[in-house]
Image (tube, rainbow, N blue to C red; front, top):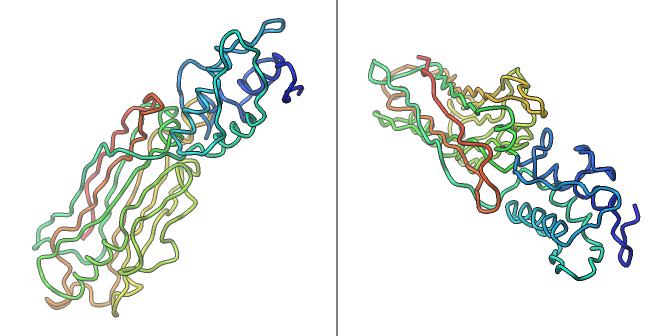
Length: 324
């Protein structure tokens, strides 16, 4: 590539930055503006319109084209909260000079896709266990949740733009006893579980729980398979017989590849299981787990300050809670 400070900007240089190849043919395997900004492929692409057009041989690279490239890089960086070198748009009529930091800025923005400055909450809901027998349960509860996107690309854009699917847990007992208290503490310790681009994180702590699979876990949308994977597991802390025995576990799987741009699914199926394995299960009144055990969910929506919403709003629905 001839691109260097003091050199004339060649068509092939501009095209490589814009499309990934000197001849202007899209190449999503290398860092370039269109792969980040446009449809892209797999874990790259925001799905935005007005991608950069390649420059044909013998045609001058205009200030407007250069400015459009800079604007897309800057907007992507601002969306992510990524720090890049300042890019000053050239003035029409002036000589356009090479910007030495341009390649580094494109690489930086490419490497930070999936990050976002802030999120808004949408598609909130909850599913509570409310059975007969004074709302008592003794073995396990399973909360099924389905997250549906309009397409595989919509799912790609949502997670590439930094979207998350979030869960939290609450237990409101009827009876005051140690077992109920341990479940209240465990729910609080889990905090909010956030399933995102390529990881699952949690806002909780280990004050009421322990476990080797307490997030962060390197499993997010882009690690999805048709087979279920565990993204969160936390045990009760405190005193026996509940400590390191009772637990909350979250599993997820997808419906697999759907579109032609490298998605890994348009439907995510989560299964959140509360397991009470303590030896005193459903014993005397002091050992009863009762009340309302509840799962709450929401979507952490990517902001639209710098990007247009190309992902829509995922539909989150809870199925019938099972267990006893």
